[in-house]
Length: 188
Image (cartoon, rainbow, N blue to C red; front, top):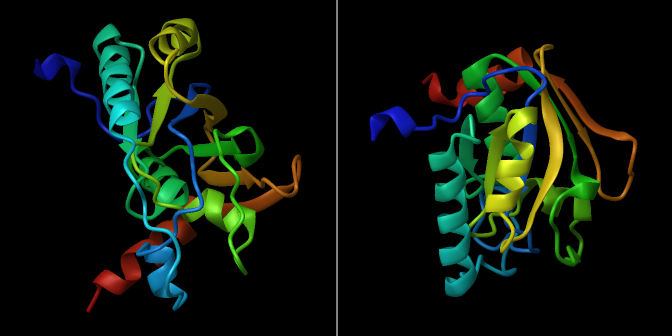
């Protein structure tokens, strides 16, 4: 039903942002590892049972109308998905990594904040949910890891608070600068 399709662009300031699925210390083979010359590490692993429950939960939430926007957190992790959703919608976001569903993020020589931002753990999504739909969304997620990690804001800015520095900004960046950094390599 095309009327139930959900796109990735952020829709409305004030809507809540949920991370569905847990972040694990899985940077092996990731874009972050490639850019920073990291070798080895753990590649993302699939938990088939949890994946099935997660896909069913997200599908149910979309079918109920409680999801306004959704993006997977695979290629580039949470940081890239959040930026892409913001670019597409023209709205900013405030996110707190300390409340995201995370496992032990310990990796040799890689800060936990980097893992939380760029890990490419499987079966994770970032969902935009209107405040009045929070209860319905959370009911759909009752069998999978999830957390409300922030909200959409009017200002074209991404503000991200870290895991290791709760209540302190880790990243504050305007969308125009981020979008230019994202698009510049494509202009050859």
